[in-house]
Length: 158
Image (cartoon, rainbow, N blue to C red; front, side, top):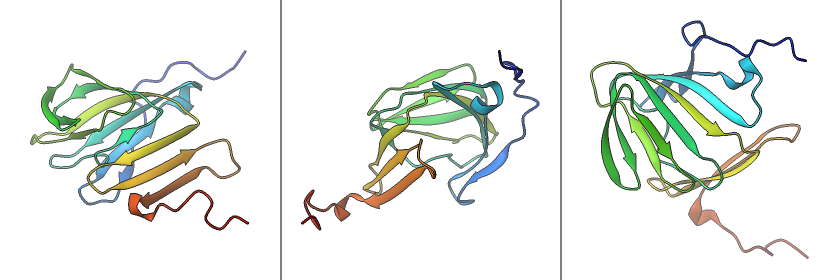
């Protein structure tokens, strides 16, 4: 039996800067590790007005569920924009391109719960990038490239 507590209060967690300090600027903490979860990922985010946590993206293997705790924002999902407010629960199923943008003048605070997949491929429709993410290696794999950089499967093989 683990001595790790299965409980954490979101008011007690330390948020750290995440993003590029430009448009993609957020404060985040990964709650999953604090309470010993393995198959689910959970993070707490705060996003300042006019900012977003992530580029518009779609996961090939991970589902996300966001619970809006405070504030208002705009959800862009599969090309449609939705107004979102505190108390709303948002589903981002596999392959649904999605992004939350704080379009209000107040801080946005939300929990994001996701399937904690060891391998995922992420598409970024706005920038035509692709990301390959994998854990389980000595160093996690986080590889991003423009989709136009693709090569033939047998290139370089003898």
